Amino acid sequence: MKNLFLLILCVVFSTYQVANAQEATTEETGSLTLSGSIDAYFRANLNAPNKGENFQAPASSFGNLPGFSLGMANIIATYEGKKVGAVADLVFGPRGEDAVFGSPLYSGGMAGSSQIVNQLYVYWNVSDKVTLTMGNFNTFLGYEVISPTANFNYSTSYMFSYGPFSHTGLKANFQLSDKFSFLAAVMNPTDMTEFNLIGTYTLGAQLGYSTDAGSTYLNFVYGDQDGKLSNDGSLIRDQSSLGKTFQVDLTTGFDLTDKFYLGFNTTYNTTSSGEIFTGSEIREVAGDGAGFYGFAGYLQTKPSDKFGLGFRGEYFSVFNGGLEKVVGLDSEGSGSVFAATLSGNIKIGGNLTLIPELRVDRMSNDFFKDKDLNDSKALISCVMAAVFSF
Image (cartoon, rainbow, N blue to C red; front, side, top):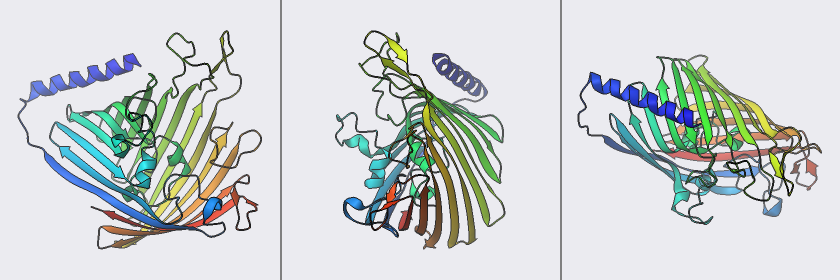
């Protein structure tokens, strides 16, 4: 990890020296812009209770509150110069709180000012080919994002919900050619965005390929997420530790025609079984690692500038108890779900988008309750969302 960090710095500073030798640096005046969004929605189950302790929703992120509900207000301040810049991305409301769930560390677990920070980073364009970024930035994994303005569907996939949301660290973007790019990063444990509480670090990498028709990205993260082992291999606390987490993710999307678009995302996440303190020694826990995998397809059509229709089909599977209370699990800790989502995008006045949505989640094992409170494998729900962007 240290060698990778030093390699990133060496490449960056070497590129900077070459760029400076070619042209004299001059003072610049950057530009400051404000952008953001506001969203709200209505949600109801069609085959399950909608009130009280019996209310249910898919265990994916955002848009899961009953009745008329708030999303978030998102305000983004961007300073952009030729060489340097900064982004302050602030969120308010239930969707924002869910997005930055790992942030209230500095205030001792209480809600604090950090809980409204979605992104907060500075960047340096070392050259035309290299950009260095440091701070808190949204993840480079996956197809979907936190902001509802950038997703066609309003509800989110399981893969997005249980992959990383954000990272804090240092990343370097390299433009290798007109079509190929590469990213390398050293970061805190996933979603630990304020500071590093446990003293371990996660490595990230991305290889990208882009053309006018679309883009493909192969992403990786690897690191110890709980930090319960000290540098000499002993347990910091008298309890078992998780092993290191590895995730590989492929995201692609391209235009089939002028009116049809096809996207695809697949991911695999596993955490090794780790170690346990027996009272006198540390032993490796027997057994396989735990985690999840899945794949999703996104087919969208826009017959006009005012209307679009999109379908997302996702298969998501948990193995060896890798996630709890997400899908129905059998006695071995395995289970899966197929989720089908049909969404419309109706443009009103350019800035407002109405998103009517119908979603069906079907589990391999019982997980939901029907209107009579009997065990059920399926949940059918609908959403009407309003998303305003500026």
